[in-house]
Image 1 (cartoon, rainbow, N blue to C red):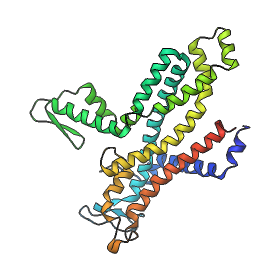
Image 2: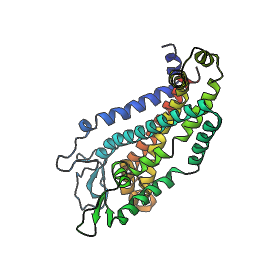
Image 3: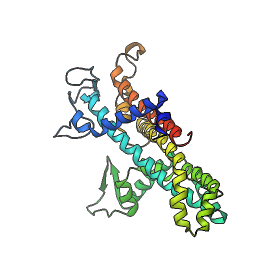
Image 4: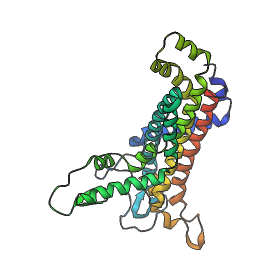
Length: 316
């Protein structure tokens, strides 16, 4: 409790916390704030005419307007909050857990084993996550093609009547989003390097030497002392990464490389209407402004929240 007052003395920490709680509320209350269409459930609910090519301004049917094809912006915006929060937390928690444990083990063992583990982490740093997305997608398509089929709109089809037997790679990529899997595989290294350096420093402290002298096992020392005293900086890094991975997901979805961000798809659907007659960006403001603000504020919220955690765990 002694650490809480300094945290709340900065107005930035208040804003970050309130924004994060707002997105959590939207994610949890999405079914109540904007119920699904029972006939066609999903984040993109059609409230206008399906053949309407132009976006329509806000009215009683759609309080934030409609995208082309009569899609309700408010409904997609609310359900996009749930999708963004789920994606960001799953990716960040998975990478942080693996990276922290990996870094703690490599830092504690040191020597040849620890050095080899650190070199493996460095080799992963040379492989960008975007390249990983493309690699996993091509691996999936090549696997389906080798089995005599093709993939279209989320469904695997066969050129013959013979049913395609799913391989392990195919089953994995059908279950897990390729972008999510790629970010998990190629984003744990900063956590590992951070915890590795912290653990090497902690090993020289008196309480670790005392734990060894009292007969503490390596596993007990890592679990009880090293992990507990090195997770603070990792939590700060993880909080900032939540917003970053969601922003990357929306960007890749918008440009069509990969991902299935709802906010990114909203921007992609309205990309031809960003500029109105005469080059004005205010003519169809409802097309791009709500999803853009949603993505930006999500990233800002988690960055401010991470800065606040640094005051709580590091700058104390």
